[in-house]
Amino acid sequence: MQRIRTDDFSMKHTVESAQPLTFFGDISADGRHLRYVAGNSLVEVRQNDGLLYFGSQPTLSGTRLRKEIAKRFGLQDDMGRIYEKIGTDEFLANAIARYPGMRVTRNDPWETTVCFIVSQFNNVKRIRLIVRKLIENYGELHSVDVGGKWVSFRSFPTPDALAGIGVKEMMKKCGTGFRAKYIIGSARTCSESLDLNRLHHKDYHRAKEQIMELPGVGDKVADCIMLMGYGKLEAFPIDTWIKRIVERVYFDGKKQGIKKIHEFADERWGDYAGYAQQYLFWAGRSLKIN
Image (cartoon, rainbow, N blue to C red; front, side, top):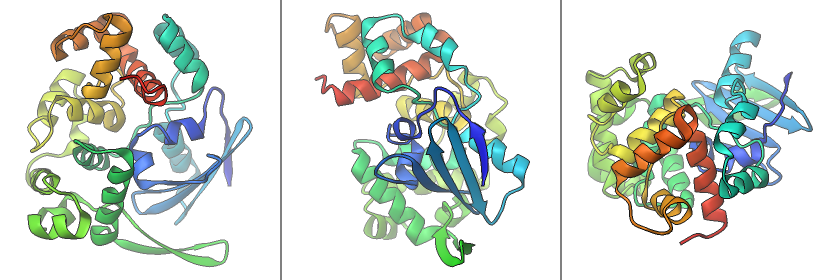
């Protein structure tokens, strides 16, 4: 296995914090061992003290795998600078202390899109179950030799694989409910006319506008995709939960509109608003703010 020295990184806090790897990866109870699928390869990652060990089957080239790991886990992010920028109030300072090393992951844009369409009016346990069923029913099957044992896994279903599925079939097999029509509609759009990979080089606002043309992708889901699919750290996803946290922590509980909260986040945290959101979201859930 290869290895990278990692400072200010916790695989446990990162993977458990309701990001796409939460939904399609398998992490051990102690948070030190993770398996996930990247493209057509099974990637295995272990964290031990300040070192991250990783390998893949089929084997990716050394350089390609290192880039995958560094990008996936946001290892290029300057956490000292980010913490200095966002940790300027008691709530976020405590959140950083509670979940040190939690990073924003960068995932395949299509995987991210499906995961967050599924996330609408849903909880983490059920999102994970639905995503798993989508993979089991429509992902391409692979088998690899891992330490002398053959291991089978399925890659994430492509837009082409989902575009021809019927709504009723997907609802029955995967328990997607009303989300099936949005998943299938987005798959058809991405299969026929929208190349998600071409949005990487567009600025945040233009890329977000185009993503919101997909069925079922509103403001919050679009920002999740911008943040965790494209690494646009200025994105600040706002759902009912994060709205409530921001109102409670920064506006003395007074109701605020979505536009006002976006403006507040941009002014206060700027290029790292997405990191602030992730720490607010996860600390708020754990501390049971309501």
